[in-house]
Image 1 (cartoon, rainbow over the protein chains, first blue to last red):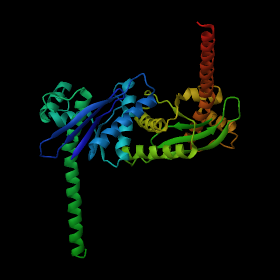
Image 2 (image 1 turned 180 degrees about the vertical axis):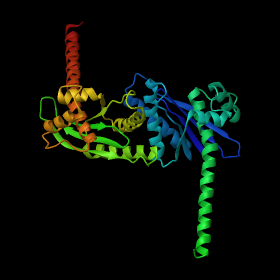
Image 3 (image 1 turned 60 degrees about the vertical axis):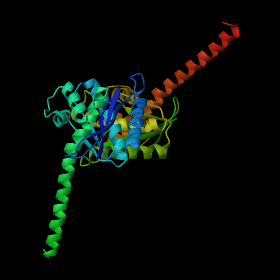
Image 4 (image 1 turned 90 degrees about the vertical axis):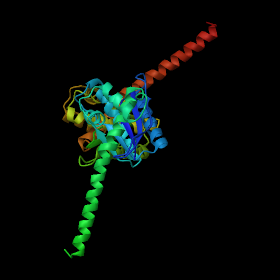
Length: 182
Length: 182
């Protein structure tokens, strides 16, 4: 399973691609950021993010996308830009028919460090360790995006397995009921 | 000049198309709304809005798009959805190479009623009157979108004329300076 993690932002939109599956070793593919300047018009910035995200989708062909969930209670001056950047990224993924999951920052922290309250530095250190890298990808948004991808591989992967197992159970149960003429 | 006004929202995204120019009579083309259900995943909702806005752009070929500016101080629970819907709409327009203007609610109210503090009902009544309609377009978001388009025809059109006049002045001034060998 290949996941593209996206840490949305207008100035820097972090992107990280990780391969993996529950119970298997994670494999780092790449990470980086799409940048837009605050000198640009909002429409140009959003278009720049769309083009950047689309080019990553085209190049790395992920199976799923994991985006950081945006909260309104964060810093009001940046949250609007974050919401707008995330909307563009989510729409790109949805247009390509990809499943889109979203995780809160504390879900991501808990996934990679074991604690939802971990410091940023601890998250960066664990991203490097779990992906067998000498250092966390730079900028920090790229490492956060990789952490989102890892979070989805573990949490989303587990959820997918449960969903598949339930479907399988209901399918078999249905077959059994039909065989019994119920 | 044909303007598509967009009053962004996840549940109802208002759209209104108006033809006009400064000093000429406005001509109403159409207005309506793209709707998405709160039962849908966010990615499906954003994709639905993108498809809706794109189909209006394709069908009505506006020269410019005017979007309501989203403020973070509004109702926090709805502002995120509004920011996300507006991002998708703005990106659609920018992708098509259209100029995108944004106006605050009070700028729109001032444009159509003369007062930035006008009541919603007053705005609706003036939209109907100025567009020579028996009643304002329904739902209210469609009428608000038409008001945004009207606001841009008057304000943006004036700004465009000033910008063009200034360019012309500087071009002539430059020609004059060159002719004098300055």
